[in-house]
Image: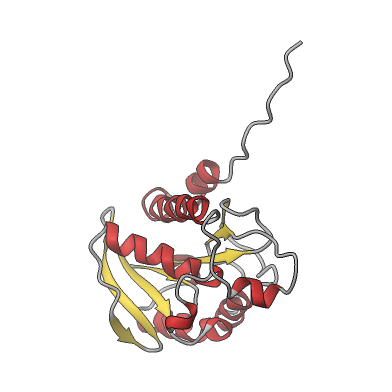
Length: 193
């Protein structure tokens, strides 16, 4: 059994915002694999199913972003899992809009939801998929709680699909394969002489 956790905020006010990208990726996985994420367990919405033959719980914490770790810790203990058996998906202002990065471990990079998870679990050894939402020009808090502009949405739709693909790869083939496949940078065009 693996936990796939999408970080976000509950309620209509936050639906479709930049900070709820994690929830959207988990919803995509649920739709792809016919897993209904509707049962309340602890302080999260949960759906149980399989992705590529791997038993999963798709999780959307209901604790609001800054307390996400409480819901994750409760589910981890409830199902007897280790932190390395969790995959966390979340938005990242430090990545260009539409890009994704897969990591096996690391700090929170200023993301309050991921900081809550790391603190609650007492380790940085937690696989994660970060989805770039771009850096704001003004207030970061206001920016992450805003919705994507119509011109931004196509790039984000593609990024969320690739993030879902990356989660599937982590589950079926492992974190190293996923990092090699999804962290590649676009090739720099060569000048012709």
